[in-house]
Image 1 (cartoon, rainbow, N blue to C red):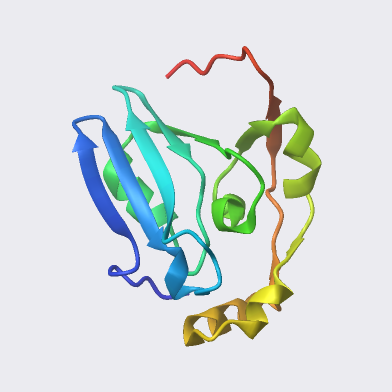
Image 2: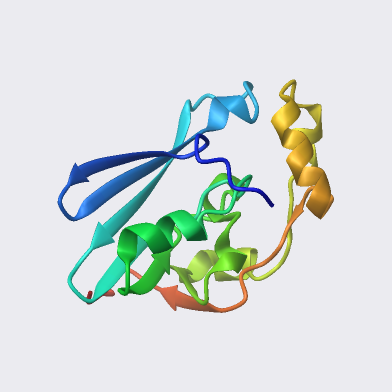
Length: 147
């Protein structure tokens, strides 16, 4: 998959916080949200990525550039396709225990075939089925992530 550097909008919100946006309305205008937002928090030795996005273009090279030699931890806020599509590109995903099974199996996104946007044709490469995460750890209310 080719990288389109214009697809991701990266906003440095603070010294240790980036907001990475994908324009959801450019994938399918039927969605009520304009953007899917991903968040990247940096500490001295580790980085925390919150969600992995819609997966139209590789996210990992962008993240690697931003985090340098820090260890990467990834959390999904929930299992909607536009938040988990690039899960398979990272070693391990953390998600609430209730949604763990959802990201361990392929996700059907054939509903996007009806989009009026040509960019969804990129999903034909995976037959509109999102690959599962390779390794998933459950989290629950009260758990703490130490960066």
